[in-house]
Length: 150
Image 1 (tube, helix red, strand yellow):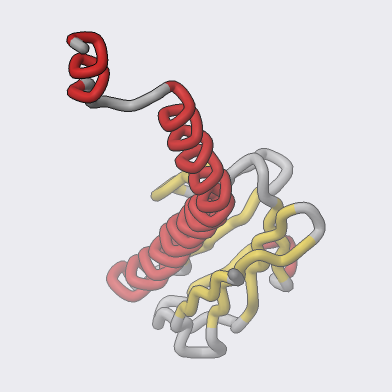
Image 2: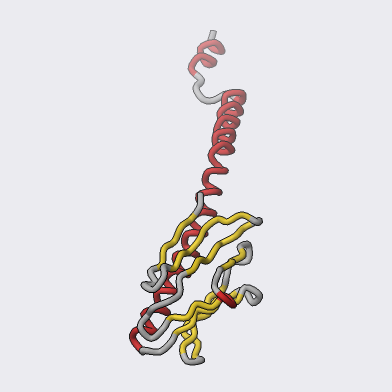
């Protein structure tokens, strides 16, 4: 009689209940993981493109302030882009290794005139042969717009 009473009062998880609970938690994690990975990749692309757009704006502001031409030069072979003014290096940033950048600017060079005006164009961020984002520089005004593909 004492044994039956002892068994009835026991509480806790059995091994089967614990195993099933762990399997359900791991299955739900596996379902959610791809969404988090895609979210992280998109965030990384957006941060890089916004940083590059900020450097384009920086080059435009420098050309207006100093009334000298400022050059934004993309060097994909070296994996960097630079901002130059009168031969002096103002800024240098590395490109992400998993992406390629293409542009319709001649020699990958954006020249900001003394007034800040610029020739319009587009930079495309490419991963695995697909465009995953772009930066559009508007004609004359030089306004920069970032678009990140989902």
